[in-house]
Image (cartoon, rainbow, N blue to C red; front, side, top):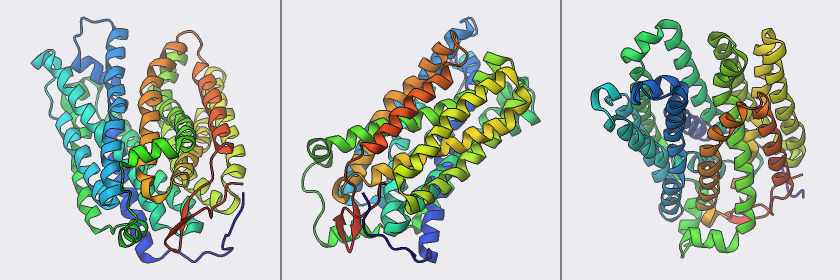
Length: 439
């Protein structure tokens, strides 16, 4: 479907650039806080669980705490989205980062198992749940916020820039992890330096919250408030009753996003070391290249959807994700020297995750957009993001290439979701209209 499109959209204004920059920076710091946990999974397992347990048991328990953050996301996402649709996007967008900064800072101050016994992992679990509640409102709120600030012809670019900012948070986490491993020995890190990334994350979060004070409410929400067009019933009830197809498509597409981020970017460094015996530093440097490529490709792919449509862009980029993931694992097995360029290529393919938020913000009308995006995204991420590490790690013990098989299956489902997407909504002169472009 192709409809009214301006061939030459005007350049971004200074106000729009400031909005995108502040939103992206805050998203980067908040995602850093959430993912830094995964880069220190092995060390955390040794610090917060009894050393008498087998290594595989500690690994499962640590991944379980990691998953708890995902399982808590729907609660935070639905609550913050409800108030975001009723009282404004900006307030919830700012609150989410405060709720992330506090538990991240506290993780860096927690006692370990030798000091506090079983209380230590329980406290860690509590902090991880609080992080999950906070992150549940961050990404959906950010995508809705920038999409509603953008021109119709630049929604893909705006969402791509924010997604690139979220990916930058993963890159920051990788850089901190690599820097710590290069600077200190594993014994020194275990003795206390592991706390540094979490303390820094908490401080970064407070800085980002302060910066977001200069953000303005979105024009779409202000127009709805002036026209008294805010949802008069529970937004989630409206989403479930009237937008079931949009929810289903969004859930499937989010599964693809979760698979690409969790498997290709977060889990693969550890898997390549365990499954193929590769040197940690070589894998970490290749992962940095892949994550940097992800940050850039999300912006480029988002902008491409504005020009060519989501469907036309989705086919080549998602097929690249599948091929590059297989190439990465085959390269690890048979040509480790090519790991750096192969991971870079996989990072470019993983940039296809930006198709998910672009699809979602266009799938729901403004009155329930925040709730629709947040509910779909967090429900899918809670199930698939939380279970993916356990499933992939389990299958990897039987087949070293099972992570690539998993990506291939889920990515094909994501591609199918793009082509099954419902009619889409964007504002036009203050009204919701089906005015965007899929093909």
